Length: 309
Image 1: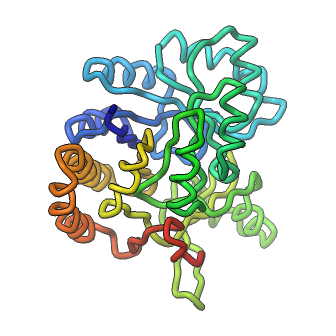
Image 2: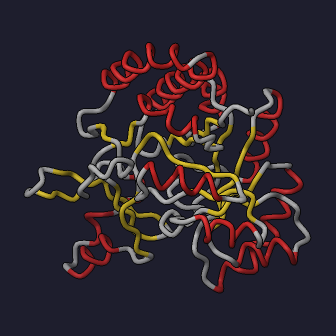
């Protein structure tokens, strides 16, 4: 039985070096022109450098092309895919079927990972995209753990699930914040807002703060809490889920590196013995709680249907 992959989202090349040492198996990179909600911005040249680096350590690299594309970008998909093939990346993460068509027309052979973030909710749909070229389905964050396991049992493709970090609750392709301030003749108040990681929507009724930011793909609103499943990993590993993702968006690189190390310990302990993992998991959870930013409480997302956001 192959070990489950530990997938992480790095900030930059140097962060990849740190994450390799921490025990990550694979990395999701890209640029916002083609990809959504990335932890860091990687140019084509940086993707080439990152690919060379991970190859030296027998790791994998995936490139995000999971945007929903308008006509003005469609002609650029094929050339970008060809560049990724020349570089030798391990997979392309996509959501828009235009990527499948562009890949075919450009005669590119890179494997595809289907990721819409919202609609990967059943194994029929996962298998549908599998028949159209996808080798992996990235499951929606709103699924229960029971649903994840059922999908894995019936899927004809690899299955990826997020186990740590914040999740996107809402996206609009419009610049909602910018439009709001512009309407009030206050456009200058949100200048460079795409670099602002400290904006929040306040929900006074639930005492929640929802991170929000804008980039060229529109407006993104995130969950008020971080998923943390380090003390429930055996459920995923028992089910042989193929890849477990740590999403580092909005977090400091040092935090992501440290958390990756803890998940590496947990996964390795499980494969040593179930007893070793059970003895270690509470200690690892406490270590994560100790470094968790005060504004980002930990929870289990929708895996046990405890979440109300």
